[in-house]
Length: 304
Length: 272
Image 1 (tube, each protein chain N blue to C red):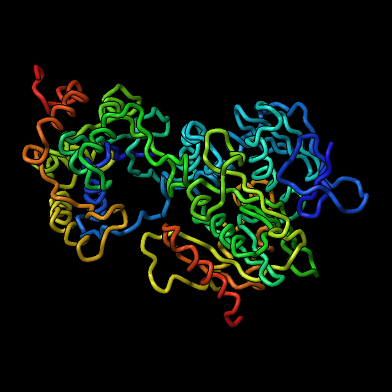
Image 2: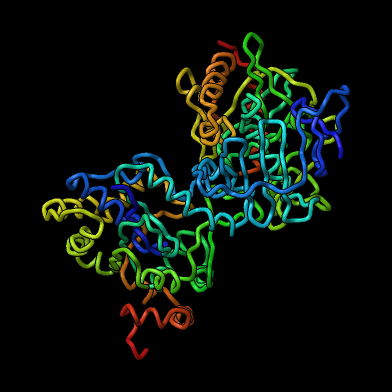
């Protein structure tokens, strides 16, 4: 059993979670317990959300054939039934992805499909469809000396009467080989997220990780275009910003879990509190430095 | 009734032209904009659709996992609709129970090789290799993330034979050459499989509205969203262009790779 830090929770885990920071907080009881054990079998009488996910009255089952099964209960307990060896990175990809998003929903937090960068004590959220370049751009910010709070999935705390807060995840970026090479991140000796994919777990050094929760400042939706039109930047106003449910990590799953109210309330508060822009980028990694400059300059734009 | 009608073909066999013809026909033979997007923006190889439907990111999955779960994504999507959908595909035929019918377009592989080389900005020999590769999967993401999901084309012969095999739904095979020779007759022949009545005036108008010169003119003026390489998407569309553009060795390679299926389709004499 080891204790780890994730989104401010104390996580006690029987499965080694090498991506997470050790718990350095108080002596509280664990907020989340990760056990290794038998996951309840599929319930043939219940409909499945998908071939991988079944939502049951007492918990959610996530099944990755040939990797592991997961049982996610009440935001406080996860049972992992490994098929691969317990230390396989493949098991943690889904635990720290979809399973973590389900935990957030169960705990009333909004899981966001975004990488989070600390810019002067407030958070730049980099979102966009899969393949738009969130992780690559976050890693480029990191290479410039900025601290990240998360890569790909971060949690938003939405409490009545309190400001919105982005919670820090763990010091790791997932990079495909071509992005890593372009950013001159050495990949020798790095762990692959899946045995078969050249996508790597790139750890962030302590100085490049922000372990404290910070308020959001700006949301950027990235999208790739072969030849981005000028100007490549478009501000999303009102309903247009509100309806960008793709900001939510697996929003359809969130709806299936009964979190409509959380999603709508969080989106409304975000759209109200934070400017939202869409930025078109080229697929050419050589354009990254200019993209960092452009996105960085957003923070200096007049608000309102 | 919900379900999917497939407009299927190996790439560079006239599929885009067929879709534009159908779009024009469905609008009574109206002019079409080649860059007019699909009505609901749904893309069968879109990552977002897959990720949201399955609840996991395809970018964390292996090729085999994506291919295994892709049908359930389609099924969920098709079932949520009240109207049938018309989707283009280059993947090999699979016996989905939500398939309502298929039009499969086939083209002489010697001409496909020329067009595929141009489209993918590769040499003709490289295109011939792609076409001859068993179980060929395009757009797989092993080293980098591709914008779309992988597609299992198979070899040219595998692709064709998957649609020639008996299926639990109607499959109408039409050749690109027949489409070029008499577009109106070819379109009239395939419409019933897709659930359309045949209106001869609209057929005639749709054929006129989607003449290759018109499509090329639009691409020259405004570009085409589906073009990927440095070359124009709509080429000469020639039938038997290979006769003066393939070397004897290239032609021999294609015929060696695909002779049996070519003969089956009449592209080679049975005793080639």
